[in-house]
Length: 308
Image (cartoon, rainbow, N blue to C red; front, side, top):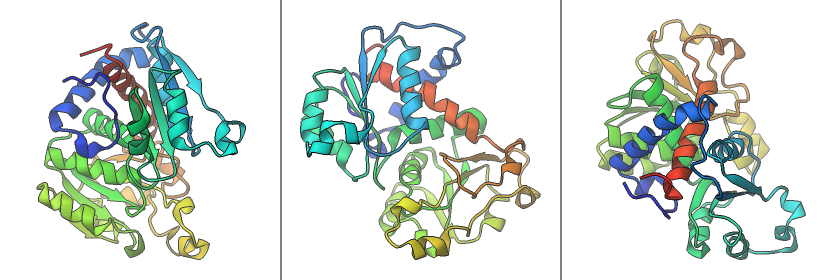
């Protein structure tokens, strides 16, 4: 697959062959990500990291990925200390930064920001999350986690929590539909998956079931993908309080699940997964966070033309 120079904006533009190619490349990258091998694959290349929203895992895993491959990183740092605080537009920021770097990673609170940035950039834009829209690199690391810890083809998966605003689950559902997944959506009615996404998934051949009860749904699935209720997406704090504690995973709740059940979470968590679950064999979310490094290494190497 030819990825050189391509923007990574949304999972809707990825074919299964493209995804498989990225996941296979990530697997080759894993020994380098673990520090067991050294690489200068991206020596001389510069990655610009522009984050307009807080981040730990996405930002640090992109930076780690670039450093592990011998490249360098330019970090925008605090928005308040940049020209954005003076009123500079996103378009102008992108025009300036693409003169300094070979690729740009962008996180922005406004949906569609990454696509807009791609219209003004001469170097690849990698979308690290745009509001409630898309987060394709998170989806790719989620798929890689499912592949490594369980199986992708025909996987039975439950996605639980904030399915209305959760950009991770929006992107993941589209990708899972390419693998014949059996998808169960678990959420309070106020946070259910947007109807247009469900209809689109069904058109793609995915089997989709909705419920607001987590107890029964998780006993039959191979993978449970938990998400936090995103307080920052709520305009009214009282509306957040109504749904904040409706879905929780505890050791007791997992008593009758499949032995091979794997639990994923894009992190950070608040209180939706009890810490007692962390030591159970079902917990995969901290390994999932690590898998972001080889996956983002693969993406950077591919879009910068260092690998075919």
